[in-house]
Amino acid sequence: MIGFYNEGTPFPFKGKKLSVKTQIMSLIAKENRNAGDLSFIFCTDNFLLDINKKHLDHDYYTDVITFDYSVENIVSGDIFISVERVTENAAEFGVSFYHELSRVMYHGVLHLCGYGDKSDDEKQTMREKEDFYLTTLSIIE
Image (tube, rainbow, N blue to C red; front, side, top):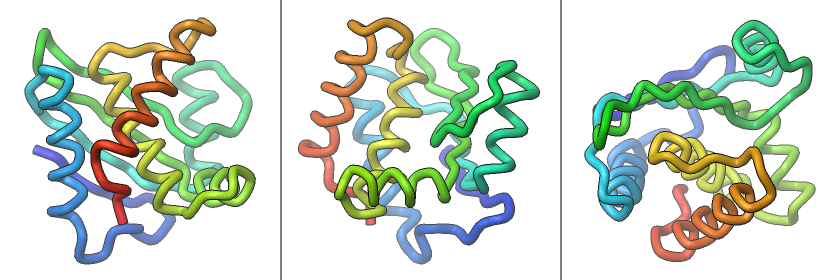
């Protein structure tokens, strides 16, 4: 089951939940995984900063934090996304809000599929996967 929630910020997909779920399910299937319980929580910068400090001991803003509850081939987890950070990053990178939001959502799901982003090689692989899904799947809007 894929759920969408908001914490202190408007939900960005009014009337489009089915389309978003379809994109996420397609990504999971292409990674040869099965979908378990996934929650996307759209929140503010400060809400995500508090999570970053409390759970990861990091004192900086970020666009996405993923908590992985996957077991074997079943992809499950909570993906927290700062709508404010996505908005700022979209402007900085010269892409639409929904393009950047799609990238961040796919990024979180890719973490649940086993991809990391700590080393330079992992970051490159993650970026290639994000780009692949941004062109293979449609931009979530």
